[in-house]
Image (cartoon, rainbow, N blue to C red; front, side, top):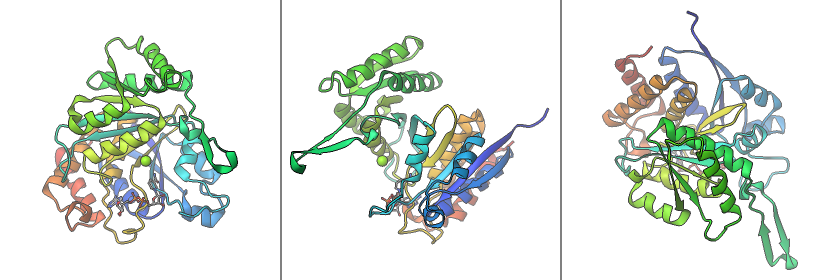
Length: 341
Ligand code: NAI
Ligand code: MG
């Protein structure tokens, strides 16, 4: 039998991207699966070199790969002519409509035990159409919030399929009591999609109540689906439930490409010191393997991360003194012990 070769594009980006991506690559190499890694550039350093934060070659490499692992990209605080955020551009350009953000308990300080949920955020519309206007000589500002049946249906469909693979529960998060037309349409599309998934228990939660219930009882939730801004806010909340930025992985998934990335940014305050926590990126790599159908190996990596977090040494953000490399070594040791391919 010929072995499957996975083509993975790696984009380090900026800052600690240069540290966490090589660490995650070493973990992938230790699995015993066969990878062909393709390196690509994006972000602020890339903009300074080529005048664009995402060269066409990078888009091609993402399209040519089975999946892409992305580190983080810096956005300058001042507006720079011609600059655009790399990950936002790739989401839009490649129609990566599903932003998938799991929040699962790992043994780190402050994490709520038993939490195991996934926020599925619609990634292409809502307020992120970025249509704003000023009126009344600058005293009134209006932003458009776009909800379409098609985009709502396809994100609900994605979330329903995910719920089927998990514990079979899907929360439709909305504010249709105040926004009956737009969020009403979102709900209508979601219920239409749900007709084809009768085994999933679908229920509604109003977004503000959802925030409270997530804090008080995260174990109530399995999969949650929502429009763009609600997902942006609640997924940071759920990252907080499991120990924060150093831990939280994510995926941006479309029909033509999939990009997995830690939720955190380029962390300029610690970049170059070799102490960034690679956990979120390693867990993003595990999510990527899940997406590629390597479910068992994905679980093995997650378990290895837990063992490394329990036994230490941890990175400084978690109160330890390990370097990025030392922590990745601990994950690899645990992975090899649990038996790789
Ligand atoms: P950040 O996530 O880079 O950092 C926030 C704080 O968390 C910092 O103190 C940092 O040291 C710490 N931190 C983050 N990741 C860590 C890790 N893996 N290990 C240990 N500590 C970690 O967010 P910030 O400071 O708001 O943004 C910095 C830059 O990153 C900005 O240019 C921003 O635009 C960009 N950014 C990029 C994102 C992406 O590429 N998807 C997401 C968020 C921010
Ligand atoms: Mg955010």
